[in-house]
Length: 234
Ligand SMILES: Nc1ncnc2c1ncn2[C@@H]1O[C@H](COP(=O)(O)OP(=O)(O)O)[C@@H](O)[C@H]1O
Ligand SMILES: [Mg+2]
Image 1 (tube, rainbow, N blue to C red):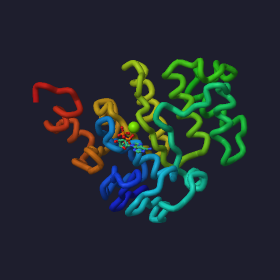
Image 2: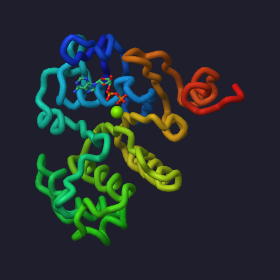
Image 3: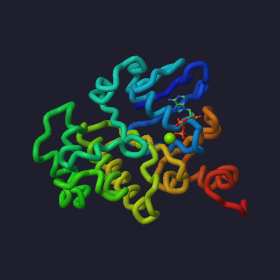
């Protein structure tokens, strides 16, 4: 469904992503794991059209979208839940959701759908988003992305700053969203949590793909365990 081919991104003269190949098949959850500064956010921002690749292509269902504008990319079915959530802190929950529907007219059915997934947001629809807890803000960011009816959702570190229990609940929800037909590309420093829900994973090290395998194989890979899963025994 989504393919990065020989894909590079630079900031000025500095090449951050060095000719990577990455694929996400329809129906999958693919985890992209890597340390802070590896280039994960840069990849997602470039897929979304916020940055331009300096080389290679981004293809959605075989169509080269690497020169398309961000709003066009959203309309084509790619929706991005940014790192640190990108919610409008001074707007209410409901107003934030309205922003997610700017590509199409929202009806009460749309709201019922997201409030069905996240009942806590329904109770708080008039609350100013900046006063929500971290977990609730993440729920809001995911809901807003869902309202554009994506075929593929890009999630940038949804677990950032959340307690383990809250992370678990967010990841359970990501699985539910995936099981109803949304393909997911999940970027995480929390490799353990990400690989537990993913079908396949890629390990990004300083702008290059170091490993690509089934999530299960990566969870059992000694090098991955040492570097990303905090396992001192292997
Ligand atoms: N706007 C920018 N200008 C210049 N360098 C940047 C910019 N954004 C990120 N970088 C650099 O690119 C590298 C990758 O960053 P990023 O994609 O945010 O990594 P990650 O999300 O994996 O932590 C880092 O070295 C970072 O300092
Ligand atoms: Mg990042």
